[in-house]
Image 1 (tube, rainbow over the protein chains, first blue to last red):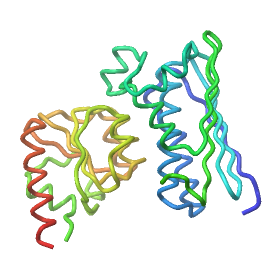
Image 2: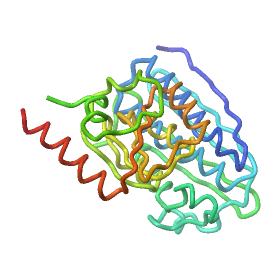
Image 3: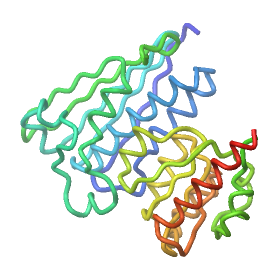
Image 4: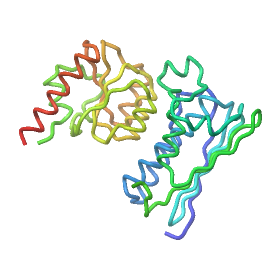
Length: 146
Length: 118
């Protein structure tokens, strides 16, 4: 496959009702492309967690997905409070989620570790008050999962 | 021999909230957690997920992870939108009046005795 496929999704902060819609859609697309199910699941988990982070923490965000013959590149950019200390946020168990979000079973401090574990390449940039940008790149046919 | 969701429903006397479609799923094991990212990170395809979370995001996770079914404990019912989404995504939502400890003990025995049959 030589052509590049491009998809965009809008995410609203606080909209848990639709959380996971982008991830579900991307999963269906990758399955149609006959990508190995292990690779599909890793992408779905990484994107789901990133998507939920926008819902749980930001005011709104956008997701851009590019798929070419070799890999999938996902960029998530949000308008939100940003992450003051990314290293701290990456620590398992660390979370700044609200009590309401935690009651739903989110905010256990496992989201970013899940993203790291399930992406081949993860890059997060953020500035307090300016929002957060996340870049996830996964190889589609040569998984580095093992 | 693996068990289907339907066989599990009969064996453990579970309530079925969703349409019958997903009951043919094969059950490979179980996972128990009320933390969604824990399930996202650790549950495996074909497992039955036991939880008290009844909101729509449970379906999103079960679908993404290709879990066999969700069992809600302590008589907790799925929210209407959970049910609708579960039917769309073909994820069986089941229920029991038992608490997590009691249902998981029975689930464990049911799955492992079935696996030992060979």
